[in-house]
Length: 180
Image (tube, rainbow, N blue to C red; front, side):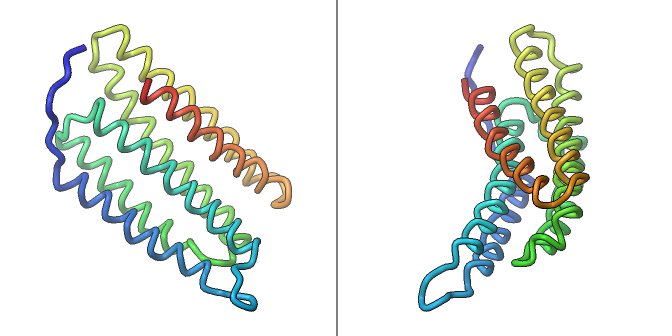
């Protein structure tokens, strides 16, 4: 496979900026100190939210760097995802339990959007190695959607464990698939 230089588009930079704002907002979860110490539960909530956002950002970055054409359709997908991410950002708060269903439902919708982007490239690409890698991402997306979908339907105490393990495992799978 030939390596070539790829310029970063303004749309991608705008997309990345949303994540900078999100990380800034996420730190507000940690602002409640108990005798100068961050409560373990607050830190755990922060990590869950941070991992879910890094998960979304990383998959989009892999797509943009490997497969994105920066055409109108790619830009429309990015703008749609930015709209959803801004809404998701408004659900990011200390009271994660009350926003758990809506938060993870938006993660599922964003994942479907990302899966559609990968499927679009699957039908555009002709190289077998590229289509195999793209389909591995699609299968990973389907697993993520199923696990998070089950996690938001079952009781919160069990669902949170399922969703958190999904985020953690999904990052591991995406790293090994996307950067190998």
